Figure 1 (cartoon, rainbow, N blue to C red):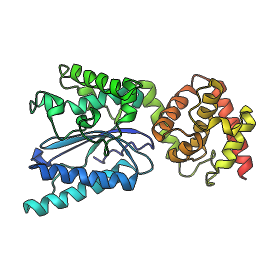
Figure 2 (tube, one colour; figure 1 turned 90 degrees about the vertical axis):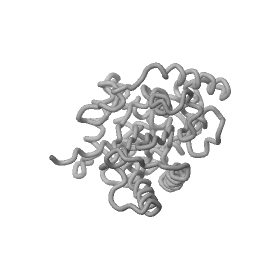
Figure 3 (tube, rainbow, N blue to C red; figure 1 turned 135 degrees about the vertical axis):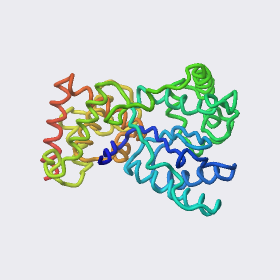
Length: 322
């Protein structure tokens, strides 16, 4: 049977799992754990993804990654190849260290981000390796609590879900994780059906449609194969909404400005802009841009006016860039 293609979406949240070949141990010592984390750190700097959680167990590991321009497959290929070479050299082994290819599940961020971080951090407790999550040294939980530096893990987007002030957010997060200790294994986080996507029916349907649009190599009527033109997009937003460009850069909460940013992000993605470029245009962090886009994309099916304005904006964009 041919392998099912990976679901790869820029800005997507992925729960990544890899196991030792034949479930053998892949981490024997502290140095092994440190080596794996150092390889992850190097690739994070090179490939520019967000890492929200990790947990290194004895014979497998979990990562929660938000990919940007580089696909999950490339990220993991570099990390796993580097670790396999280290492992085989150190332990004088030959052959595969990991069992087949890694598993990566595309997850609905606004619904599962906090739940997945908790679930990943609780792995050592469920395995009865420790009684309290903060006592396990090879997960990102201690970074969330401020016990260790958070240089590898992007804790802020998750902590903001639990409070505006960091100290209180950490307390609420710790309580959230502790409350999950009695929930046990959750098969939902592993079984995602044939599409490899974890989320609501609406999210799954919208993602599949989005993938269909992305994979059209010949028919690209929306962007006409031209390079993205940031100035043309900003001018289109100004013309369609009558909103000055100075207004939609930064953290403004005015409803009109929020709507302008939403349309800029939605139309910008249709025009071929990357998440990073839209982050620079709006003054929002890339993770927020990605979530705003997904929400706007879902809303177009319920709000014809939003779709009409985006279509109009795209026409002005294409005219300005031609």
